[in-house]
Length: 274
Image (cartoon, rainbow, N blue to C red; front, side, top):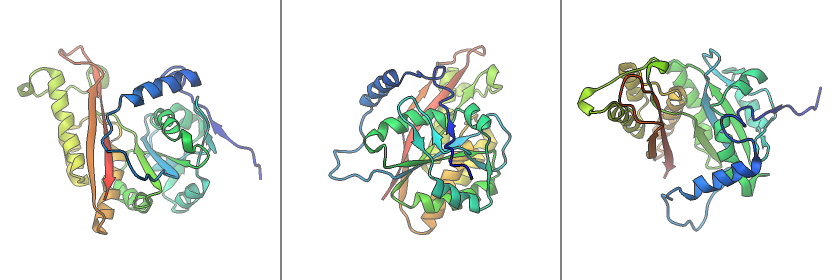
């Protein structure tokens, strides 16, 4: 057996974000310094030891979830280690596929969270691991199955879950042009549509979220990872765990006013366990 360490390169560095470690560090410090804290100064904190990152598959058809075939995810800041023990537990379930290195490096949904993860955890950089999971176009029953599987990991306070998604992709290039004229300008209609979905997510109801997607077909690319998370939460609520989810920020890449325009929406939220 080979002990060669296999690495996934930061394949979108230099195009989607800077490949310069010092420059990326300065950008992240600047952005994170502008964040409004939602909690008062803490007397004690629990730093996660394992960070699960669930991202949607954009490039390969996938009806299940897939695990990486590498050991290390590179970032311009420092390398992140995959938790092979947890990967072994997940692989044993028979529910996962393996993604090739090519698929892994083509996909951006997980990678875009790695610089933030690395920066946020820099004071613990030798004390945590990541568990990247590529989520396919799951049926509702598969979302339930994977939610049930991940619920035991979500219940563990030493784990953190990051779910990768943006919200509405609107415009001809995305082949999506839903418009509710009663909301006024197109960008207002998009915001209303997104916030309808965000409100349903805050209710922690996977069935209502599925029904919303069936009705409006909103182009939320992380809808399946979100579905998995909502089903994991539902599983834990059955066992008496008390949780709430709230969105903290919402933005659009531009304000659409006519049919030639296009935009992508972004929303950030957090799950609190009591």
